[in-house]
Length: 308
Ligand code: ZN
Image (cartoon, rainbow, N blue to C red):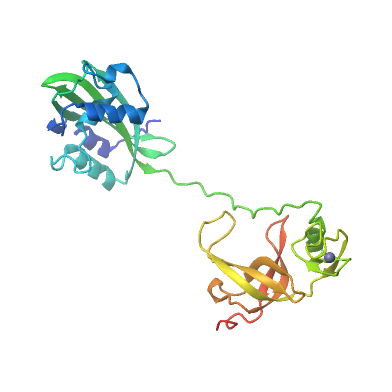
């Protein structure tokens, strides 16, 4: 949409319309077979017109012959730079290429010497797009081969102030996957009981919950309720990657329960950088949202511990 109302900036931008941007630019190389071949390979274009003794350049290479490469063209600051600076100052600091149109008047052949001129053709009134509010700027470049107009290249950008991002609704923690092998554990959590599986054949405790005993292979089990005492057996501090619903940095502990099994859980009640191996912790249940409650471990002695 086009904004209405006075726009003094637009009046100044209009002053750039028709101003030359590049005058008598010169292609760094004449049209040549190696660049044509590389282009065709990159594009996957095997058209026979672009190879052999009578090759022409693919028409869409038009702009390629004018490009300055890494070292650029040493033509100093241009009307385009001046106009960009004006837009930057007005807060239109972002840029996105929107479209390109080319017109071909004659084929380019190896050996053709390329010269070009470009001009700021038009600047749009202020427009608001999904990206933000700004001005479309169209540049036209006339490309000549051996002095003869061979084609024109129009390039349009939107120079804009980004739209304010809508705040996202607070992300929720991922849900645990509850299945028939671990449902008993989550039933326990719902009752604020941390249940450990116990093999009824050999009495080995196991965690996390599994369908069989990894000591004797027994299929039958019952549970024991963890006392809730434990120590930090190991831990990591997560900085990256950021996951929705998590606020890095935070400590993830491998907690060794008094019963001997280990489980992964958040360590709370202590700054992330004060978590230490050997630190005593105590089970509690923390509610994260209306559906999710998880066992976490609170540091009992927040500011000292195993590693000092
Ligand atoms: Zn067993």
